[in-house]
Image (cartoon, rainbow, N blue to C red; front, top):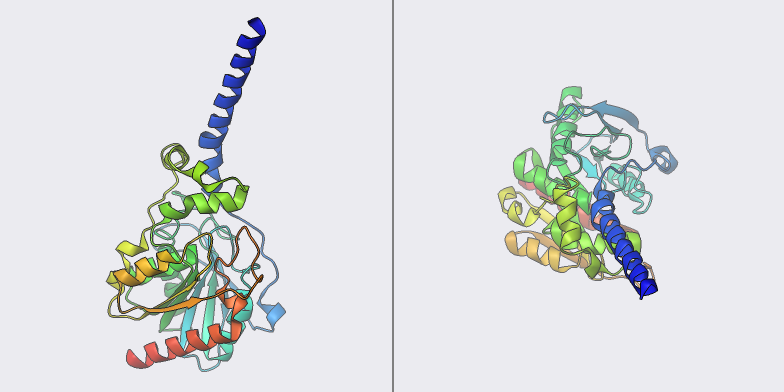
Length: 308
């Protein structure tokens, strides 16, 4: 009997310890993400300048690469996803930047606050809400430099959320391309945590999300579905892969329902091209580079022509 009680006590202590770890520590994964840069625009033959600036809403210092174009049509504010940085090592967006420059678009490739080489904000990451100020700050910087007066937005995952929020608040964003973003960040937390840990997604519902918000102060407020309508009448292009395991394609459909005028491009994965756990999440450019460039540049060209 004594051995049984001791086993019960040990088992109870282990369970309590696991709960404290799982619901008290693990949600901190949604915090700061200063992953190192991998390469630079020079690797793709792009002329660029490393710049820094401050957004109006926060004293944080932001870092970016400015890639000018000859006789530019506009500047693209390019925004990475959560946990990533302006070198986009997994999405290969520096190659996309080269294509945009070749099509007459300057590219301002930003490290969002709390990411890459940018500083930390007082509130920490908000998954697109506060980060929208970084897009406006990048436009302010380019205007002050005399480098651009017309702007379009481009981002994937959290970056896609960021450019939608930025366009909803700042009328200078003439058009938005949002790739693989979520309608509501709370809905995709379990999928993200599963990709990071390999543990079943259902374990991350309920107390996990509650502790992330209430114990760690994580700001799971980003709900583009509630603000995308404020972008009207400016054009929006939503891109999403139909097999995305992190942000299911249903999120794209919810955003399109909230803004019926949005253009939608649903891509499909070539067989075996995107292994788990991240799969095809935000990989539409990598999987369909030529069509991606054609669709995005044609969309921007039409939007800017219509806004004259």
